[in-house]
Length: 374
Ligand SMILES: [Zn+2]
Image 1 (cartoon, rainbow, N blue to C red):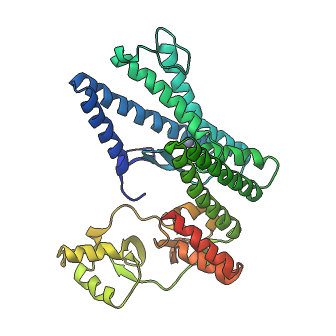
Image 2: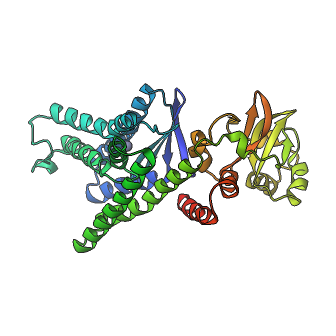
Image 3: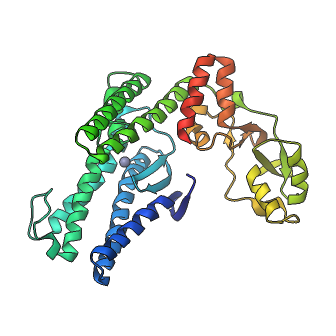
């Protein structure tokens, strides 16, 4: 996701933090300075934030761990102010697996809350904040942390997309209906629930309820987009959507030489070659940036970030849909038995669908839903 920084990587799972999360941290610190002021309270606040981040991270690791038990790998965990997201390689079509993976996150928060409650003396009711909370600078925060975890579990269990509850609902519907039908029903239910939240927000003058409602309303559309795309590409393999018309540049070409090519070409992504093999991709903007920074004599090799991900031509499009949808112009090289065959991106997939089996109405609908992703 754009605007995220990587914190740590372990066993192929990368933990990212989105910059807006830092706004939340800054706000908590400023609020503490304003109301308490002494360094002890500020230190507790910082401790509290670290603990809260850890709870959100554990929630996501809960999803990732259960997915791993089913042989599905998680690649990125992104922390956002509204919570986290674990991007799992592919969400299973199997309702039992989807149910287990979706429940694992909120379950983590329930376990943390129980541990905090169990370790606290004296025991207050599980959900209550003690009345003398202000006299308990240290413990008080642990109580709040417990309530926070209960809140996190409940929020995520709201039966609407994109919350875990939405996936739980779809999984439960999946025992009766097929995957496509189940998602459609859960999608409609999400929108109805969003309307209820917005209406309640207006009636009760609650900004929070209204914001949750709008959040669900927008995100349910994204889920619907994935579903439509997923059902349309069923059975289509990468080799069928391959594009052969692309521009490749050599790794040791200089920025100046690449600039010459840029003028006569409007591709957004270029494939960098090491001899006959693709070795990296470069965004048009990255080359323009290098020109602006006057790095004319530098080889393109120096501009490449990260490792190149090649896809296999025999793979199904559905299996790499999430990967392609992250940036609809990003090109991925496709290999067939070790030989570079062509490139693919989400736009080619949508164009292929337009040309082959879906009508213009479906195409414009997909395009407008795709807009929700940006
Ligand atoms: Zn979750």
